[in-house]
Image (cartoon, rainbow, N blue to C red; front, side, top):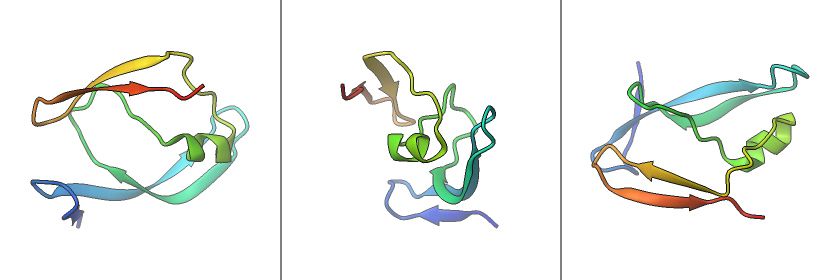
Length: 78
């Protein structure tokens, strides 16, 4: 059964996942992630990328659109 987080409105499904670097095979488990089967991409907090040594996108800005159709700009810290 999928857990729903009351942090979101409406409540959204959250799952714990295993993240693995496909090159080094370094991995971490039980990372809580928002489950969105209609998303076009997945955003992972940088701290998890650093933990497994994953390459981080070089794009400076990303425009994001939520399921409620609101948009925001994500700035990648330098």
